[in-house]
Image 1 (cartoon, helix red, strand yellow):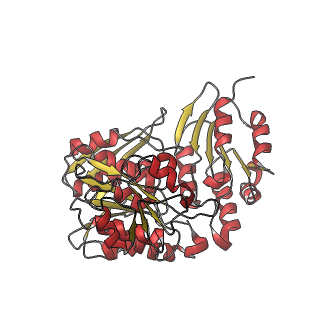
Image 2 (cartoon, helix red, strand yellow):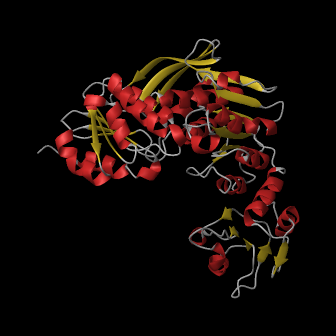
Image 3 (cartoon, rainbow, N blue to C red):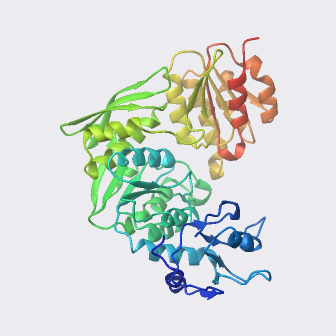
Length: 451
C-alpha cells in the first residue's frame, strides 16, 4: 500500500496525525498483531474482549511500524499515531480509498462452503499467467479483507479475495472496500442460519456483492445449486457444475486411491483434463471454479490444467493420510450440513469399511437438532458402518444413524474408545465445526497401530 501516504490515509478517514515527522511516507501492510510487525506496517490498535491493542502501540512502533491507527494516545506513546474515533471504520475508509487507486482484476469469492479452497484453486490457476496476491489463510472478514487489500502492491497483476460473512449488511461493507471485478459464488448452504434465518437469507446476504460489481465484470456461480441458479445480473454470467445446463461442466469424475481426484472439464469445444492433487467431490467444484475464472480471464487450456495441478490445500481440509492401519480423511477444519453430506458422499465412493467420527455443526439456529439427526440418517443410508459422535448435538447424530450410531459424552471418551471402534483397512472421515476442536481425534486415528 506504499502509494497510500500517511497524509492520504488521514484525509481518507478524517483522522489526526500525532507526532508524525513525515506525512508523505508511504504505508506498507496493515497489521493487527504487534508480534508480526514488519518495517513500514500500519499497526491497527483494535480493542478486543480480552486485550486492548493500544497497549502494544509502543512495541509496534519500536519494531518498525510507520504509524499506529488508534482511538486514543497511550501515556507512554508520543507518535506517530493516526487518531480516529473508530479503528475499524477508519481502516475500511483507508483501504477503500486505496482500492480506488488500483486497476487490476480483483476476484471476490463467497459462499457457505468451499471459499478458501476456491481461493487457493483460483489463485493457482491465475498464477500460471499473472503475479497474483491472495487472501492469507481465511482472513476473510471485516478485518481480514482490508488487511488483504493493503498487501496489494504495484507488482501484482491480479488479486483473489475471500469474503466471508455471518450477517446481513456485512457483504455490503466488504464489497464496498474490495469492489471486485469478478464475483465467484460457491454454494448457498446451511451456514450461519442463526443470523441469516434461512437459505433465502443466505442468498440475499451473499449476493449483496453484486451491487458493487461493474457491468463489464463477470459472475461465476455454481449451476448445480438450486438458489444460485436464480441469480439474474447484467454482468457476464458463467455457471459451472455437473449438470448439462452448465456452461462449464465436469464429467468422467474419479476419486483415486492415492487421495487425488480426476475429471474432465468441458466448455463448448474446449476440453480440460483436470488432475487435482486433493480428495473429494468438492474438489471437482474447486477445479471448475478455477477453470471458469481462467476461461473468463483468457487463459489457455494448458495453463488451466497446469494451475489445477499446482493446487495445494490449506490446513485440515480433506487431507488424506494412509497408514499401515487405516486411511484417514482429516476434514476437521469446519462443517455445515452441506459440506458434511458432500464429505460422506466422497468417503463412501472409496472401497473399504466406512467410519465417520463427527461432532457438532455450529450456528445452525433452531433447526440444529433436526439437521444433526438428518446427518446421522444420511450417513447410515449411504452405507457408513459406524457413525461415532460427541458434543451437545452428538446424540442427535448417533440417534439418526440408528444401529450404526455411537454417542460419546465428550471428545476424551471418543479418543479412549478409538482402538475398539476401528478395524484395519477402515476409511475414516473426521469432521466437525472448528469450535468443536475435533482435530486431536484425527491425529489420534493417524497414530493408531496394529496391536
